[in-house]
Amino acid sequence: MTGDIKKVLITGATGYIGGRLVPRLLERNYEVRCLARRPAALEERFPWGVEIVEGNVLDPRSLERAMAGIDVAYYLVHSMSGQGPLYPRLDEEAARNFARAAKAAEVRRIVYLGALGSPHRPLSPHLASRHAVGQILRQEGPPVVEFRAAVIIGSGSLSFEMIRGIVERHPVILSGKWLKTLCQPIAVRDVLGYMILAIETPACEGRVFEIGGASVHSYEDMLSIYARRRGLKRWFLPLPAVFPRLFAWWLEMAAAVPLGYARPLIQSLKNAVVCEDFSALRVFPIVPLDYETAVRYALLRIKEGSVETNWTDSIFPGRVIPNSDVRAKQGLVCEERFTEIAAPALKVFGVYSAIGGERGWIFAGWLWSLRAFIDRLAGGAGAKNEVKEPGKPLPGDAVGLWRVERVDSGRLLLLRAKMKIPGEGWFLFESTAAGNYRTILRVAAYLEPRGLWGHLYWSALSPIHKFLLGGLARKIGEISVEKPAT
Image 1 (cartoon, rainbow, N blue to C red):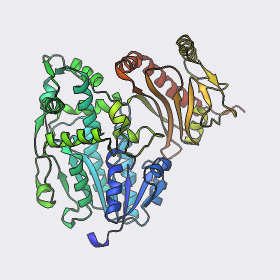
Image 2 (cartoon, helix red, strand yellow):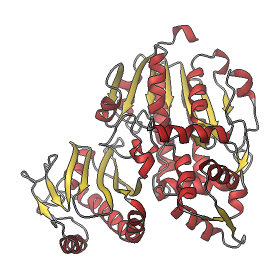
Image 3 (cartoon, rainbow, N blue to C red):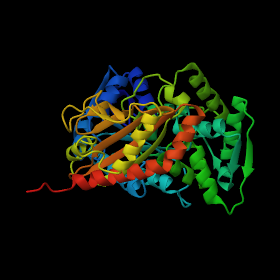
Image 4 (cartoon, helix red, strand yellow):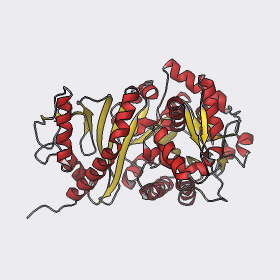
């Protein structure tokens, strides 16, 4: 199959794995097309040699355009950060759309990166969703090569940043039975090797491969090994088995990543994620690295300032800086809310793009006024509104305590904090068309904390962020479905 494969499609090219896969496929002379909700983000990252098609996996029409003439399609997207039961349903809908579009376009192979976990034991919601996606792709689409991996270790990966955040920030680490669960972590370079060889190895078609590194550890061992590599002394404080909720709460707070992303992974700690099938080692010419070597390489990339992609790239638009390790060094904390709205994306955009104008902040205006008052007491400028044309903000316009950093008409509004805070802050509204005049709205607050005060500031405001984001998302949804007065 190798010789006649010319054109590949990558979904999730703004993400951690997809962003590293694109340049490697270009180096091997494949024609690469990327499906992206925000083409501008990829145009900045890959200024040459990549065809970019606007769309998303929840929009079947955009998938038809993206699949035309494609030989192999990589499926590297999932909605892990969704709130409550929303993300598994979206994952399944997206996989079904993708598989059907690939089959209709006569795509010859789908390559999918899923998750380890024994199908013979109860799985966490996150792992069960990853397995369900693979099953849907196999049932509805062309032949699939599915790789199932556990923790991926590399500079900027979500799992590695969770490990790094816990060990770097906490001399005493709470431990429970979940940290005794076994895991077979794999280096990102090995994952990329498997992904590329999936289109160059005829014998892999239609198969599921479990891939892992050369060593198996408990999660507590993984934290200890990281600490040793960094020369840090860390102590583990075991909690009685009767306190699993306390342990889970502490781990969520300690992980230094957004709760919506940390919680599904933490829930999965109860599942052993080790390879039971070793056929990948026989089919592919890859000798995986062990965990400690993978950690050493990741730390080296951070020290050199050569972090190729970061897990935050896919969730934080407007700051796509190739080869930047700013977020890898400082960390990025985030609180976000998702809601599904029975209205087209353009109408939803019209609601949140008018925020700060005549409508004000549409939810908890008194709280925004109080924050502006506090900012003035701290020597800040307080709130200003300088949007020249209501409902049409432009980069540089002031909107309350924020300044417009980026606008994608119909899709996205990114505001940057101009108030006095210990770090850099942003506020994001993003609407994604989901077909049948439905929209997935994401409202998010971000902070790159500056030192300990930045982390304490974020933790102290966490209840307020939850209240504000949930209320804003709900209110935007209500206004979006209102019928105009006649």
